[in-house]
Image (spheres, helix red, strand yellow):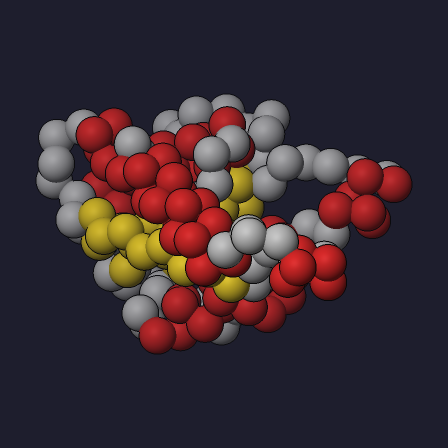
Length: 159
């Protein structure tokens, strides 16, 4: 197995932070590049919004700028800087855009966090991680909220 590109879909959650640390450790081990991807869900605007002075384009720019700022906060935590980290911010549909970017960037692995919802909340929220696992063209490592810190693989299996 040769891992050259790791896609890391993130948001501002603790789950994303944990997935980032796993992806960073794997990227260091495999000498891979990382792509941090923040997909901002397209807002659903009620019909009556058109009758106000609300500017959807301005709002979308503001939420995209905010997502970009939060995404860049991850990069200083990359430690030694041995890993190349690119960032992408997209306004779209998380599941389909994560899978599409993985294909476009020829990602060898997707590492993403999961909020670990179950029962009714999972049905109501619909797990992006679960849908990405089902539709991605590459392997997906889902880091759950109870996962321990990445310990690394033994030297005999590092490449």
